[in-house]
Image 1 (tube, rainbow, N blue to C red):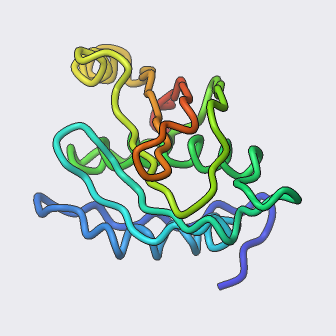
Image 2 (spheres, rainbow, N blue to C red; image 1 turned 180 degrees about the vertical axis):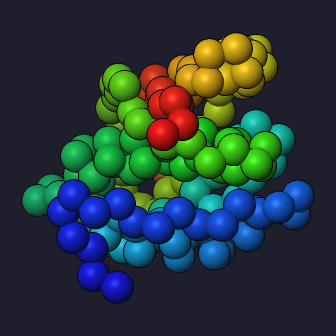
Length: 167
């Protein structure tokens, strides 16, 4: 299916009480957001409140032979969107998620394949989001991302994501 501007991509059916099939989610994500195929995501895993991606450096190379900051920023933004979307899906909620604000700190060059981990910025954040959704039908959540190349922390990012009211 070819994407068209202004036409939403069909939602992936909710997992209906089963664990999310992250391979199917990643396939859907690539169909829904065409640039995903160019971001080098090899795999996604979830454990507790952490979403971790393994990524290849080659698709994001810059002119210096290291990770291109714009691509790394896009990856953190997308990963946060995925974290919130997967959290909602796990609870049987089909609402739209958008990034409201994002920032990055580049600490060291990314020189090889890497991993990107995303967690709530505050431990109580998911509970607060659940309360806001219950009370107002919308809410926000702050997430923190850490990008490691081997044992070296290369990037820290923060994102604030909004769950929009149901249409």
